[in-house]
Image 1 (cartoon, rainbow, N blue to C red):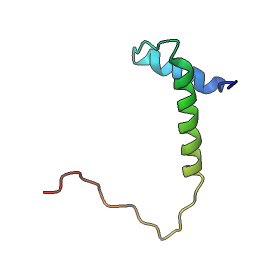
Image 2 (tube, rainbow, N blue to C red):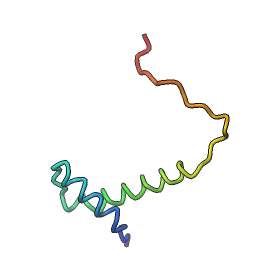
Image 3 (cartoon, rainbow, N blue to C red):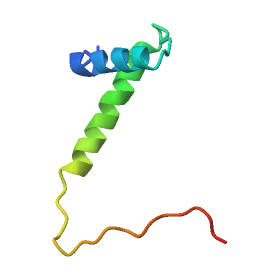
Image 4 (spheres, rainbow, N blue to C red):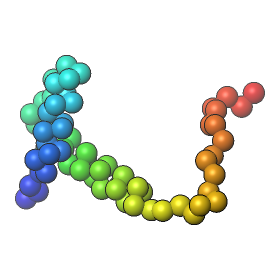
Length: 65
């Protein structure tokens, strides 16, 4: 069985409380697990180094007109 990261579990609880979101106890484990997955993906992206000549992308706009 999955043992949730206590820091992420506390973060989920604090964020839900901060925005006044009632978190159904049945949904809490899945919410914590999802945030753990997102954190691992973010860590993988942030661990990559970019070459010095890399420039930021231009500003994205969804308006094609």
